[in-house]
Amino acid sequence: MSQLATLFAITREELDALMALPEEDRVEHMYENIMETLFGTPRACELEKSWFGIHRVLTGPGERDDPYDIDEKAGAEPLKVGVCGGAPLCPRTCMCWR
Image 1 (cartoon, rainbow, N blue to C red):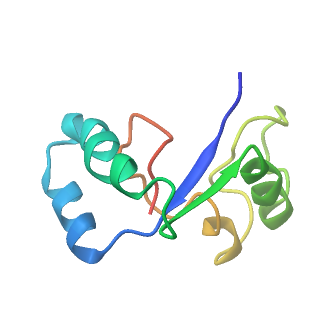
Image 2 (cartoon, rainbow, N blue to C red; image 1 turned 90 degrees about the vertical axis):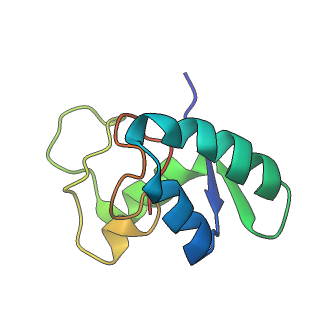
């Protein structure tokens, strides 16, 4: 299984519109209103699989035994939020962080 990442630079208005939605509607909103609009533009940065290595270099391995598991508590700020951000936008997924 691959874990790919694309970072999107969204405006405060786009973030506010996303956060105003019920949690269960945010993933669909991300796909339909943000990803489809911004993918392939200068406001999107495709990290693909490299995000994981970048995150590990910035944070270290963490306390968990699984080297492929992301330990959100690993590392120190600001480095630990450099790739994955600080708070989940869609808590039941790992696709959206700010």
